[in-house]
Image (cartoon, rainbow, N blue to C red; front, side, top):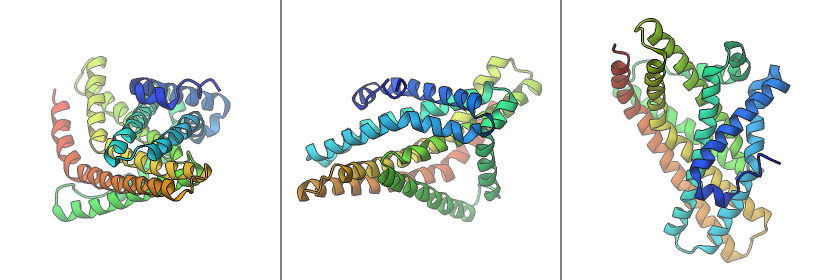
Length: 296
């Protein structure tokens, strides 16, 4: 009751920075509880406890956004209002990712293995499917198709989980946050060790360089990709709330379905943009920055 009562949707939309800090708190509390109570199953339990903390806020936000869909006639203004929800969901996701990543970096290796073993296995499976050079039109086109199709699949999962379970999409989002955090944390640990041992940099300088490199590597395409999942989850959540509240009046339901369709189309557009960034922009920027940052 304490964690779920900290923030309501109205406050969340007004103070997105507070939501980021709340995400860090949710991640830290969940991880330590999972390690303390369910040590051998800490990985998935951490995700479950974080989801449990987020569900009340997510569900009440769906109600809040559904009311906006019924009251606001201008579609452009409605999208702007939904944008407040997208922002605070994104800040929540970033906060959870920061919390998980920080704990991945500072916890002992034995604890990291218990909490993030499933996520690390997922990352290894993804990396094993991507072979070859990023330079080359044919390979880029094939990779782009694979990435977009995979992201659309996750987007559809987010949509249907939210539609069927109300707040179900939050599970997919927190799971993705934990996987990204494992990638961030592993990257930071590996490269900090390299910079300290090979380039003989002081600890603060090494962490500063590597953290900025890891954020750049994943954020360029990662933020719009996650945003597309939030948009799809919001679409499913609004429709789910309408069904629960039995808003079947023709005019009301027509407005909700129109809003639902627009959100799904917007999510698809953002998925395609994130795929383009991941295939054609991130490798170029990362390669150049990678060479610069590892130069003594």
